[in-house]
Amino acid sequence: MVSGNTLDLLWAISIATAVLLFFSVSIIVVVIHSKRKEIAVKAKQLEELTRSEKKYRSLFENSLAGIVKFSLETWDVFDSNKEMKQIFGCASEQELGRCFSALPPRSIQDIQQSLLSGDLIQEYEIRTTRLDGMELWILFSAKMIGEEHFAHGVIVDITERKVSQEKILEQAMLLDEAQDAIMVTDYQGRITFWNNGAELIYGWGRKHAVGSFIRDLIFETAHSKDYDLAMEDILQFNEWSGEQYHLNREGKELLIQSRWKKVENAATNKKVILIVNTDITEKKRQEIQLLRAQRMESIALLTGGIAHDLQNVLAPVSMSIGLLREKLTDGPSVKVLDAVEESARSGLDLIRNIITYGHGIPGERVKVELSDLLESILMIVRQSLPDTIRIEKLTEGRNSTVLGDANQLKQVFLNIVVNARDAMPNGGIITIGIDNVTIDENSLDRYLEAQVGKYHLVNIRDNGSGIPEDHIERIFEPFFTTKTNGNGTGLGLSIALGIVKSHSGFITVQSVVGQGTEFKIYLPAIES
Image (cartoon, rainbow, N blue to C red; front, top):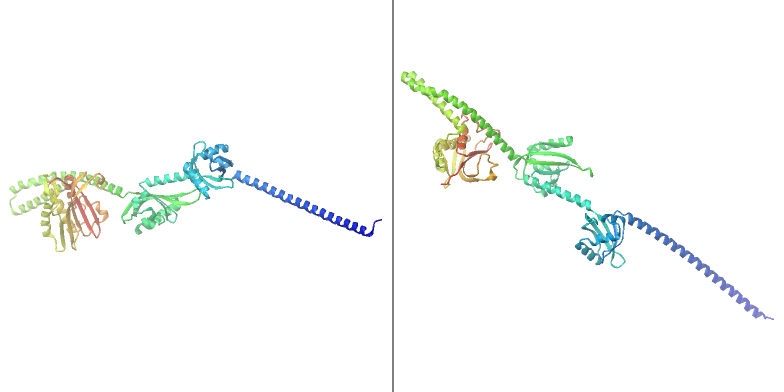
């Protein structure tokens, strides 16, 4: 029979065993639940990782830039996307590896050094070739990844951009080679492009011109209306062309043939004005000189023909006067004959002057020292000068020997000096100088009537009233005169020009109204 103590002990053991069993089962349940939860979390993470990998792979494959995984040691390619292969024209990583290893040695060295030192490579520009040998420009960016000596690279194809840049540079170089001034402005007239031709014509450097307003830079206030008219036509008709007067950096006025065109960039919709300017100042001057020479040649032929006819008419009158004097001896008749003789002589002198203008009088050709010749002329002129006019002579010590007719040359210089005197009714200074000049091939464009060689230049300058610009081209025409009240026949300068031409020389004139006039007489020099 079991005692009561034994039952109590068995009961206690049973309860303890049940409690232990309960806790064991609870722990097992908790552990199983935790494992299930952990498995669920890991499954979710794995699912997210798989989704991220798919997303990354999709981005990797569909990226507009080339992406590559490569070895820094061997430059073998282990992975690359479709764009990378397309950039290099490759079908596999093996082909791409050949293109990679064919990069310029200097580029490979720079990339290796930078990445191994822990730096990033960002937009490193490389010129290389595709698999088919075509030229390729790329921007190379890369960084090291976890594996040793492995890197990820991102490559962008910039070949088209570089070709466009080279075309732009080539076009800019061609524009700079142009002799014309080529410039671009916006609609407000602000200059955005200025080529070398513009620098040569206007004297303004590109740094100063770009950003300036074209009106302020090259248009004088008096001609700013030309700018306004051109802009009106551009805005209304998209183009304009014509002649304008511009100023260069030194303030010299230039005659410009200008063409304006509205240009619109289809890609950016940016509208600008393209201007091409040609300096025709010298060309216009040469055209005027040529027209003047042709006109004067025509006048010379006409007046020469008339002069010969008049000479034939007056010659019998002049010869008949001697016969009439033998028969008409009374006082009134003698006075009439004297008047007729004087008129006939004056008429014949005038005719000889006209012939001199047209063809020049050959005369004698001997060595003439111009400084001595001018001194003899000034001795005559000084007697007729008022006290308000002074002569400055700069001819001493100059070798100025020419081959010519002394009397004819006296007539040339005397005529011009007398004109200078008449141009200074209120007094002034006449300056006479002699200089030696050489005209070479480069100077022929400026002096249409010159020949290559050495010349003696006689310079006669006054500070009188000057000659209006529209009269300058006519002063050598016969019978044209700026003197009033019937003073002068208008033949003096015509005859002077004829004489100088017959001596194989030429004359130039510069004059400013209110400041004076300068005549330059060029005569071929001979050795002393």
